[in-house]
Image (cartoon, rainbow, N blue to C red; front, side):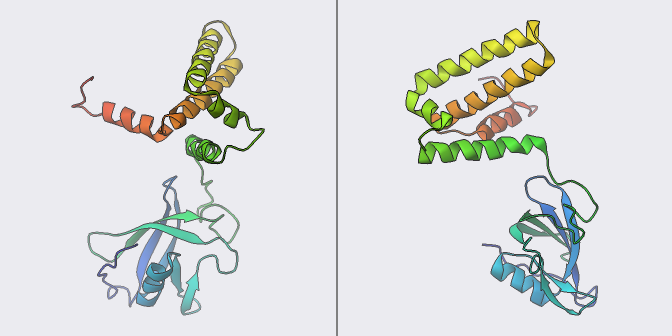
Length: 207
């Protein structure tokens, strides 16, 4: 539920700029304008709707392409006359087919870890037959932990005496099995990220 805000539409003849940002990658995707009606429709539907200055009418982003912008959060600036809207886009945002209106690619490889975690969570919930991940969960926590240890040793071996290519390969295996271990204990890779963020604070002390 997005909270209604009191905004100042008076400065630009009834319009305010709305900066659209990907909630995950933090990339700025586009800039549009809203009048009060477009803003209200955006709140009501959870999908970004703008006011077209060219056609002088409302338009919901994605209504022709299917590439809707699903709202995660809306913030107003200090003057209450500009919006920052974080979204999950369904696809490329620009009408030219690019991810952003500046021609940038909207992805960060590190974010695939979240997708992988979601995939492993789904495997844990559904336990489909024939899945390697399912077989790991079925083997029990001790076997999963043992597998993490084996992959850690193989990563060390490649780092000390192997090739860079094999180091990345074995390191990937290690990370995958570590996520499976975390999932089996009810945690996610984000829990490690939060722990590391805490350690980065100047007042952090080792437990």
